[in-house]
Each structure stands twice: as C-alpha cells, then as structure tokens.
Amino acid sequence: MTVAQSGVSPMVSTRPEVTLKAAATLDGKIATKTGQSKWITGVDARKAGHRLRSEHDAILVGINTVIADNPQLTTRDIAGGQSPIRIVLDSQGRISLESACLQNDGIDCIVVLGSQCSNSRIQILQQDHIHVLQAPTPQPKIKWLLQQLSQYKIESLLVEGGSQVHASFIKEGLADHLVLFLSGKLIGGNDALSWCGDLNCLQLQDAPPLDIQSIRMVGDDVMICADFLRVNYV
Image 1 (cartoon, rainbow, N blue to C red):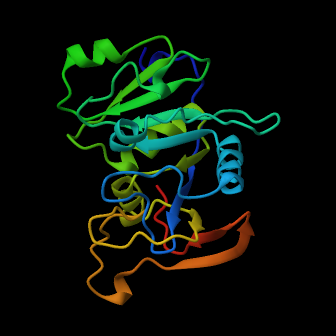
Image 2: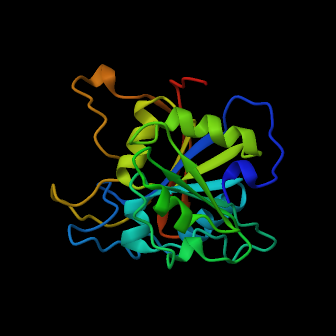
C-alpha cells in the first residue's frame, strides 16, 4: 500500500516539527569502531528516550541503523505510551521484510526509497501496514520528505539517526530541537562513529548554533535539550 492509498486525510501545514535524538559517550561516540552500541546509556536514559517516542507522531531512522541494530522503534515501558509511525530512509531498498520495524504489530511503517529503486522491489515492500514513498531523486531529500509527511497528519517527528541522517537534517536547516543523552564513558579514536556526521564546517562561524534549554541528570547520564537557532521553514 502506498501512502496515498492509506486512507489518512491530508492536512494543511508547513512541515512536521523535528527533534533529533541521540545517545552518545562524553566524546560524542554512538558505537565502537566494531559497531557495538548496546548499551551506551543506562536504563533511566533509555526510558526517557521511550517517553520521547510516545510524544511524537513518527520516528525516523536510516537504513544503516536498521541493518546494524534491527530496532523495533516502538514505545516500551511507558504507561499509556503510544508507539509512533515508523519511517525508514532507504534509498536503495535494502531493508528486509524480516526487520523488526516492519513487522505487522499494529503500527504502520513508511519506507522512503530513491528514484532508482526498481518497481519489483517496491511491489515486494508494499504491504497492508507498509507504505512506500518514492523520491524523485536517487537520494531522498529531507525537505521533500518532510513535505510528504506533513500531508498525512505527522506533525512531530523524532529522528534517531544514524550519524549521516542527523547531519542531513542539520545541514538543510530542518532540525528544530536536539535531545542528547551523554554517558560517563569514553570511546575515542577516529574510526568510532559520532552521533552527527560531517557538516562541512570549515570555519567556526559555519557551525550551526543551538540554544541550550536544559541540562539534567537522568540516572547516571546527562540529558541535554537544545533548540536550533537557524531553521529554514518549508
């Protein structure tokens, strides 16, 4: 089923409000160079992350996160918490139907493909609970995607990565908020992934500024909430 066939009434809006969420070590790493990432933060921080999921209409990750971690992308251990619509950025259609986030558990999933993905692959992915969006470009543009989502009652979007996905939202000025959980650990090295990919900041004045709203302890971890100051509204 394509999104257009989902029966969801369109809405008049600009775009969803976007919150980037990441859990990292004190030096900003989200995994070791071998890819190990569970668990960087503690139980309390993870529960706070699930509360964030319950407060958003949709949650988005990139295909590399799905392949590496096979996340369910559901809300758990939150009383009355609702699971958001799941969105996977997958330009080449590499996602497996066996992925945890594609299971028919009552929560819809949107798979976002690039223009070069084959019709046969699209047909395989289209299920009653899986909606397929195909971009007009080989790599789906974030601005285009947000315009599509705003037509289907997705007013708030939680972006959980990975690294390049976070960077894409920031570079295009399409991130509103950041929630960053930091654990008291250090991984170090150049080969371990950071929570944000290359922003091409050659000068300090090119670095996107944020207004830090709060810093607090969540169990043994630090939770930083901030707002991006430069936002290009669509």
